[in-house]
Length: 81
Image (cartoon, rainbow, N blue to C red; front, side, top):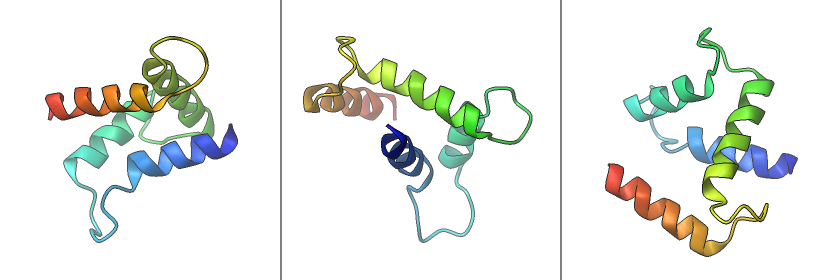
């Protein structure tokens, strides 16, 4: 589970490795994960955020994420962009 958290964290924050400045989307992700809005992200906030994200992706609530659930999430994200 720890590796899943690390992978999801980097998936969220490392979308552009060539840029030295954060883009607006990356800043938005930071603000979403900064649950107490103190301008810092703690390990607890990362864990809580990833738990929330996992629950949102796990549509059938079986504590497993399937490829179809990921595909559905991708479609939703593309519609929102």
